[in-house]
Amino acid sequence: MGLAKRIIPCLDVDAGRVVKGVKFLEIRDAGDPVNVAKGYNDAGADEITFLDITASSDNRETILHVVEAVASQVFIPLTVGGGIREVGDVRRLLNAGADKVGINTAAVIRPGLVREATEKVGSQCIVVALDAKRVSASGESPRWEIFTHGGRKSTGIDAIDWAVKMAEYGAGELLLTSMDRDGTKVGFDLELTRAITDAVEIPVIASGGVGNLQHLSDGVLKGGADAVLAASIFHFGEYTIAQAKAHMASESIEVRG
Amino acid sequence: MQRIAVIDYGMGNLRSVSKAIEHVAPDDEVVVSADASVIRSADRIVCPGQGAAADCMAALRDHDLADTILDVVDSRPFLGICMGFQVLLSASDENAGVDCLGIVPGRVVRFADPLVDEQQRLKVPHMGWSQVSQTCEHPLWSSIDNDSRFYFAHSYYCVPDDTGVITGTCRYGHDIAVSVAQPNLFACQFHPEKSAANGLQLLKNFTQWNGLV
Image (tube, rainbow over all chains, first blue to last red; front, side):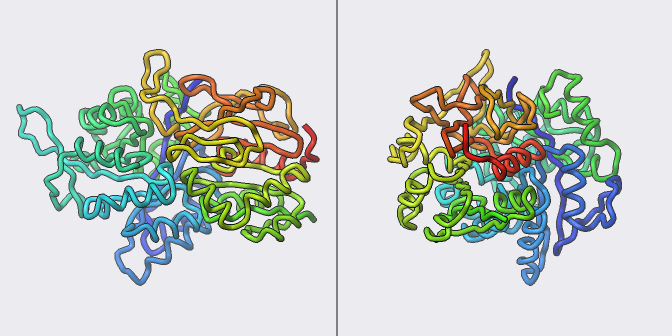
């Protein structure tokens, strides 16, 4: 009777619309974040993550309306990331109805932002997103660095050192994405996941590379993740949340029924 | 129609809480307010809250809400959620020690570091869905199965002096008190507004509760 491992579908939102499509849910408008979030809530998702990929600053306010609308109808935790630059952005999202806010590039540019934000709103509201890429040559002991700008820009920061530092700065949770695996469907980088989960005391969400249900289980059992995040396997109806939970339960992983 | 006030002291997920109550009590008026007179005139009061204990207590005092809560807490149904539960105790160990409202005698303490259960290291914050054992019958547990899962997100937990007030426990490293009740008062560490159907049921039960334990 412990804490359930969480399954978190992740949705990209651009100018207020869900992009990349969500094809399986019986919903009228697959681009409407409220419809999609409700669909996942009804399907048994433990939490929902929205990644705001809106490029234009003109549309930055749109995500607040999305969050307000979703929070009025979906009663599971909602994490929102993308475009956070200052504590004010965090406050606005929380006030709109987000439960947690993900900080990524802004933390790399100014780590103190994480401390400021957690002191203001509490650790449990702050998720630091780490985009890590393997930089060691084959045969060398593994080493990963933090990248920004969707994996294009190296920061030279060691991923494990960064995870430890962000935990010290008060992050309540880490969202760990392997940039090598993202979109590949070959499974999480389990070595990376294990290295990070062993290094910190706070929960770690594994992300990047899920292609089948065994990958989710492996993230927990081999990687030590506290939660697993996936996008395409759920969005395109390859697997349902219920199938994912049944599979994890069959491997003796505790899940919320 | 009754009026349900959600206390706004600038800390936490007020919208989530108010929207969830509006969802389960569509005929009631739900007001989010920092105004003591609005809160005093409400039929029911909900005190949510997130953030650090020192900030929360400072915000309550700045808004003249600490005294308001002390005045209203035993005269009509009152629901404390998460930090809104912790501030009801006597004191919190967070932020090097903070005096709280003292409505539920006891302390708020941090999970041990490291926190270990059956050779397994547990993460802190305790974040996610844990089963809650209903340790006694209470109207707010109505239509909710024992050992249902609720959503938690916290690093500190409440230790009431009088274990007789405890209505729910969960195991995280060891058994912790996650809900308490007194006449006209129910408070919980978990987030009913984020706990899907079980949480909504608890909120609905609160909107219909006559305040008797």
